[in-house]
Image 1 (tube, rainbow, N blue to C red):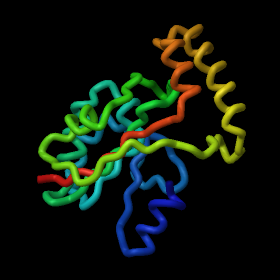
Image 2: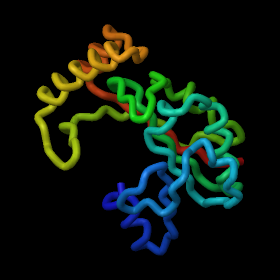
Image 3: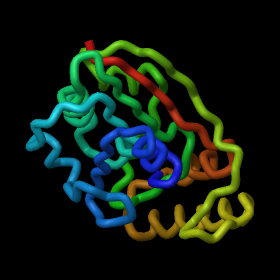
Image 4: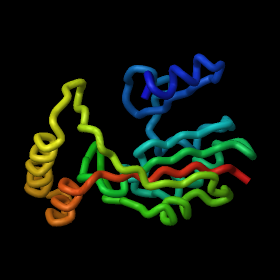
Length: 175
């Protein structure tokens, strides 16, 4: 994200703030997403990438993203639509349609929307693995999550592992 999104934006003179609950390369604001309501800043662009499936109150998150955006500013959201369970820190199995994602961003209008199919092999901690090998590992993870008492639907999980992964991509403008 830092290399492909933040650095090019910074080279074009944009101030970029990367919020994450964990320290990491390019993280400028370390905060739990539940504490977003404490921020009073208004931003021209707010990006929320693959986060909605990790929060319990999606409606609150959607409202906060809109609140943090200046009038006329943009909100860019991606959320997995067909993707295996990934409990880091939790996975609520929220796999929305475009309309379900859009409903969470009230007081904004859709500028662009798409379902993006993921065709490239998965990269994990800098080690490239063939897609088939990665999917086999994900099957094992699904069973481990289930054994540990996580609410994993094994049938749904197998469908997600063996289908092409998809992401909902949405760009909205605050009105």
